[in-house]
Image (cartoon, rainbow, N blue to C red; front, side):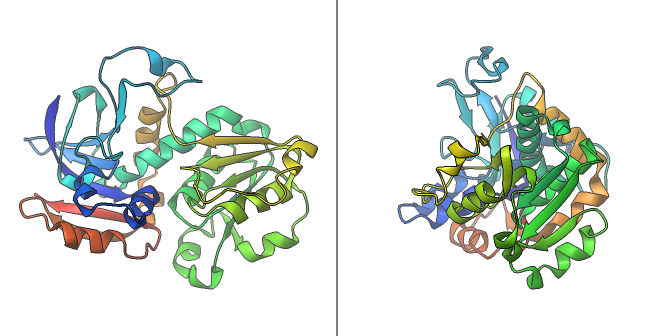
Length: 310
């Protein structure tokens, strides 16, 4: 495996959840961060597919079995990753960044790949109306991708504290219908598909999804399922309404989900760049772990991104 300099490292909600956990060791920070744009010695930029297979087997070609003991993921605390400022990955994990004004949007590719994989699992073209619960980048990306893939689909994004979302609405109200999540309690069973993209403490949001999805409808959950979701109210409705509950926290080699994500992301550069609302600087030469820690745990606006001063 070759070594590359990290240029941009996105901060995923999963990174924040790990750092805020009571058993987290601050020395593990360089081993977090899976949303990466790196550069080689010639300064050429690449987006990094964070899944690294040690043996090169064909397991990843099976759509129903994405992980095995031969696969590691950058950012899972196994090997140094985005927050270390330097990574070692096989060249086949690199996707060259095209000429563009904002190469930092490459940190969105990991999330876009997870979404594209999820849409493969459910076949988005079969749905006519979709509700998305969440205020972060995954929720907005999912809405934008669905509208691009299925222009006739009605998509409504429900965000918390809509009075605090002026920035979001100012950029995306022309593309998306954005509503207050507080109104979900008054919704009938009306949606063919409900996407849950809250990312943490999901008990309430998944319970709400169960309530508002139609009979025999589908609920798609993006990201890591929270360990706090020990008891969901209305869980029996899953059986009575015969709801399909599907999770997507990965992407598939068979459909080249990550390659498709890179192409889609950079072909929508001007649309996606406003999602990168909080950009911070870190020096690879003199990385202050405590300073990095303090910056990571700051409240996110929409999407955080580190820019490494190489």
